[in-house]
Image 1 (tube, rainbow, N blue to C red):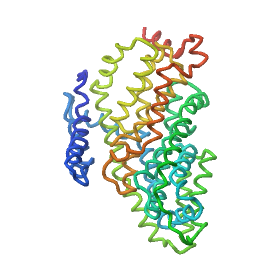
Image 2: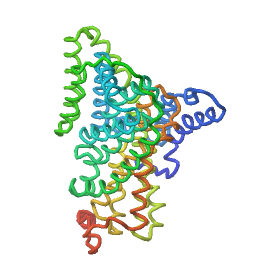
Image 3: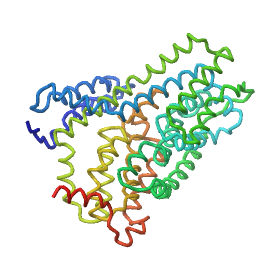
Image 4: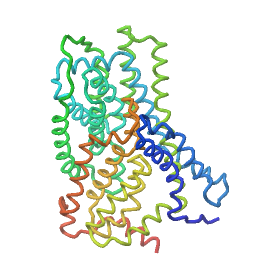
Length: 452
């Protein structure tokens, strides 16, 4: 049986979810409620979205369920959730061992108050560039940032935004990031070429962010007095950073951090075997909601694709593109739209590559430029979206309930978007191939020949 193309109506499951979660959240926010997004929790809103995704369509219910499950449980999503779990365990065990307090005390003893917030941004940038994962960086650095905020009197939102911005910096640039791999492999360019293109845009944005955090980060008052230093308890973080710099797989990096935290906890008598097990459970439990979001949103988007939603966007929007500049703006806008819907940058890129590559070919957008645009705009939205995994996770660490508060100090992401849009508007960073009028993406020609 041929599936019906529902066009714009295919997005109804996602609209239901967003309307319930964001709609009621905004309603109660403007009414002045202290926890506006708790009235309709995202998990509850998500169930309504899943229900619509499974009820829509004329196929047999079992077929629709199978379609949803196949999209929800792809290897990429399963890997992401496994990393979520490991990150949760590392965070919980290292904190129970005393690692977070040790790092905070060391920072308080060494860093002047004014340099703590920009320092968190720079450290997060280095870690995420090394590890290739923004979520892993958030998991490792956010507890430390929370400690600084609580002990030093810093604005909690400000320090967490600094960590989040640094995490997205590395996710966009790292050679081992899933977004870099997805963008370069899909576009068909070398990682180093895409890195050079991205770095030219990201570096000025990062400098701007450091300056802003330096100007605004002086509000904390680091308490005077002696801070008890336990260097051995900082070792897991140092080893994780060193392994990440060596380009180790993120699972190996986090696994090593967990083992080291446990061993040091046993040796320093801050952990027992039973306490270790309890904290492992706590760390895993803290990631249940994030994993549910990953599975459910991917399943819903899979159903939207099956019902023709993505094709509808392309057929209606692509026909209005007339210039190379317009093509790049469309690539940026489409990437942002899909990322808002999905809340996962790697999945967004995977969807966008095949859909947008014909447009890039038609208007002479080089593979490294195409990959750069995909990666940049896919890494902006997860740091701003109220349903972005990183935003939700870092809010949980800081005990924040209003996702829109995270937009206040997202200096790096705003600057990154501005820099990228400037390169589009003024036709900057053109490659030699683009200047020479070279034809790109020969694989599309082969595909059209075979189809013919």
